[in-house]
Length: 374
View (cartoon, rainbow, N blue to C red):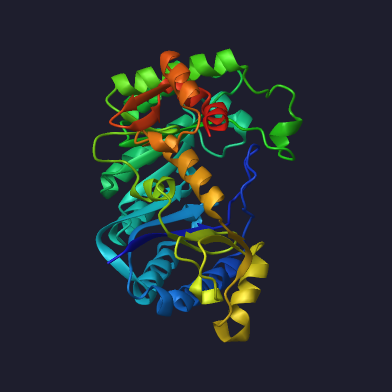
């Protein structure tokens, strides 16, 4: 039976962080209940089209999904189980912020079958957290990990942002060593236009040399600590790679549920009469999404945009996503063989068993390499 992944978007946060340009908003209690009803209706719409396939991973992201009460999360997971087929030993991840998870809530989440927790720690430095507009501090970060372990979570990811002015990356790495997560996502601070951070003159992108030095230090320390650097921004202990994210990077099919959620199917979107491979995006903001789903007796797909991928777009996407991981791509896809040799000699790529992958130095300049080689 063919498998696919499901992404559930919870577009609510207590407060938007200074760097954030994600689709999120502050909720009212009634808004969340109506939103969950809409997602339940949306899930039912897909039942006739996906009954012969099974879900291998579920990712509940946002926003801040951990704002939801356990009963609300129970409704979502139950709706997925009722509408679609779930694979045995499925990976179910929920994103959480330290300030929104109590010991009781974590235990309830674990009892619901959620077996992977992704915590947005972002930093182990209180000054950095304050500059980013985060609502928690370092003490609550350590407490969150401890509570999660006590609740039974054996697969924890932590998010860390780097490239922040005055940040001591050694302090961040020592924090990771102290909490011992199974998985770490290191994200370079991107200053998005229109966010509060974009108006703060202190925050400026690192120059190329400074970025490379920082990236190489993170790589070296994480590998020496026992993590595998299996994707440009991600590190995992053996056996703890993210099933859900690997599905993205390998261009696997995934269903997006909720306002602003994205989905992708190589076999097309038969529910809207499309046979070519395509990705779609759901309506946003949440009010537009719920109105579209709940009107017409819950029979309307809330899709607002569709992108059809032709062969060239498919190939380029495959190359770009595959090169993000250690698995790489087949060398036969490379057009510029001479440049391939030069990049190998420069230590930016490596060739093994007719597979081309980036070295850690190559990961620092990945976009340029893809552009030149293909």
